Amino acid sequence: MGRIKVLDEKTANQIKAGEVIERPVSVIKELVDNSIDSGADTITIEFENGGISLMRVTDNGIGMDSEDAKKAFLIHATSKITSIEDIYDLSTQGFRGEALASIASCSNVTLITKMDDAQTGTRIVYNQGKFVKEEEASSDRGTMVTVTDLFANIPARYKFLKKDSTEGMYICSLVEKLAVVNPHISFKLFKDGKLILSTPGSGDMKDTIYSIYGKSTVSSLLPVDYEYEGMKIKGFTGKTDLVRGNRGLQYIYVNERTVTNKTASAAIDEAYKGSVMKNRFPVCFLCIYVPAGLVDVNVHPRKAEVKFTNESDVFRLVFHGIKEALSEQSDTKAFSNFEKEAPEIINTKPKASFEQKQMRFETSSRVDEPTAAQSKATADLLKILSEFKPDINEMEDRDPVPELTEKPEPVPELIPVVPEERSDSDIDDLVRGKIQGFIFNTYIIVESGEMVYFVDQ
Image: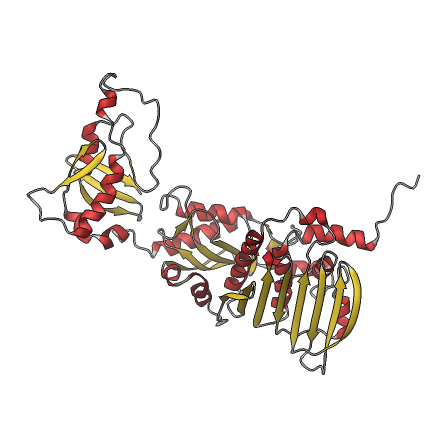
C-alpha cells in the first residue's frame, strides 16, 4: 500500500528539535551545559530581543579539533557516553548528543572552536539545518556558538513564543540557577549589549548568591548540611521571614543538575509548615547528592526532571536537612522586625477608640508618652485590626447576633484570630491588649485581661 514512509533527515531533526528546543532559553541551557562539561571556568552569555534574534555562548573550555567540530552537529553524536549503562553513572550535564543537531535544524548557527595546542581554530556554519561551510578561524582556546533567527523556518513554533521581555526573563532566571550551582565558574550575562549579571567564580556558593541577590538575601540564609541513607543535601535555606509569593527562588539541584521535583518541593513545604504564612514560599538553594544508581536523569527530553528509586528517602533527606538548619534559628528570637522598629512597644498598653472606622489614639496615663516609633508600629497593627470593627449603625435593625451576608475582604498583613461572632468588646480587648511577644516570626501574642489572642501576620 505504501502508506508508511521513512522521514527524511531534515524533517526528523526538526521534529527532534521540537522536543529539545522549546524556546530561546532551551538553546542557552544546552549550550551552557556543553560549556560546563568542557571544563570552562569562564562562561559568557549574550542575547538580544529575548534571544530570538541573537544568542551567543562563549567559554574557555578544552575546545574541539576540526573533526570533532563537524561530528558535533550529527544527531546523537556525543563524547559523554558510549553505552546505555553510562547514563546511570553520569558526571556530565549532557549525554544524548542532540543539542547542536537540534539547534542547527531550526536556526542559523556558527561554531568557532580551538584546542589549546592547535595553531588555528575551526569555524562551522549551518543555516536552518543545512551545512554551509567549514573553514579555519582565528580563535582563543575554547568554543563560541552563535545562534540567530531562531525558528525562522518553523513558523508554527515561532508563533508560540512570548514577548521578548518574557523570553529574556526566562534566560536570566536560568543563568542565575546555573551560576549558583557552579560557583567555581565565573558567569557573565549580557542583555541587548548591557552586562546584567557577573559572578566571581570563587568556588563559594554564598559569594555567587551575594553577587546575584545581594546582602539582604545572604544575611537571611541558613546553611544546610545533612546526610541520610547514603544521600546528602547541602546548600542554604532561608530563615522563616525570607519568603516569596511563588517558588521562583526555590532552587533544587540533583547531582548539580538543575531540576524540578515534586517530592523535594513537598518536603520543603512540610519543613516550613506552621512557620510561614500560607501561599508564601521560603527561599532555598539546595543541592541533593544521590548515588548515580539511585536516580534516573533520562526521563525528560530537556532533562528538567529526575526520578528517584526511593522518593520517600529523598523526602526525609530534604525535610530533616531543612528542619535541622531551622533549629539553629532560635524560636525565641521572636521579636523580629516589629521589635526592631519599636522595642518599647512590648511593654506599652495603648488605648484606642473607633469613630466611623477611623481609629484614633489615646495614651494611658499609666504609661509614658509613646515615641514616634511606638506610635507608628502600634498604628500599623491597630489600623488593620480596626477593619474588623462591625459598623454599629448598619447593625441596629438586626438580631443581636446577625448573620453576615458578606465576609470582609482578607487583609494581607495582619488577621486577628477571633471568633466568627465578633463583638465590639472583642476588638476593644484586642487593641487595648499587651503585646507579649512573637512565635516563629509569624504569630503576635496579645494578652488582654484573661484572654490571649494570637494574631497571624
